[in-house]
Image (cartoon, rainbow, N blue to C red; front, side):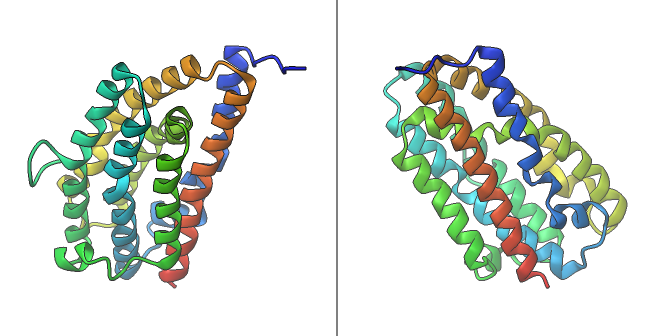
Length: 229
């Protein structure tokens, strides 16, 4: 006998209920915010997090390629442009590279990925594979970590400026530029998932997809923490 779908409010509550598994509570992030990282730890974090930033347009392109709905493809295209920039030297990836430079990394050593930990590479690549191989709506649901990100970014800017005086406000443009953007994206993504996950099976898979993404992010920080010891 088919299981009835969750009411919209219950479905949204189940998705939001995963917020405590977001990487904001990871011990490494707590140390970052408390000013407890040395310069080497900051460099390892920035270089490894860049690998994640670098593949986000590939993840979003995979969602577009799997999606048969032109209205969703048009809406999602903005994400590629945001991260890659409308032309060379712009966009979210470039802003992250600027932060890498601010913490003492050379641009070439970030781009050649010499500092990327195996665990980070495995987790990030698994996320891209998920987006390439799952139905588009399931891959979209995995990105609902956006719902949890805005407040963390605001706090990160304040804490990094307070504890790491060699980092200037403009070096944190990735976060300051992203705070408002991610809030809007989180709402748009939630609207898409609620609208297109109509059956209980789809809802359950959407919840599992978001759980998987939380595991990806947590695993990344596990690997970064080990590399920074």
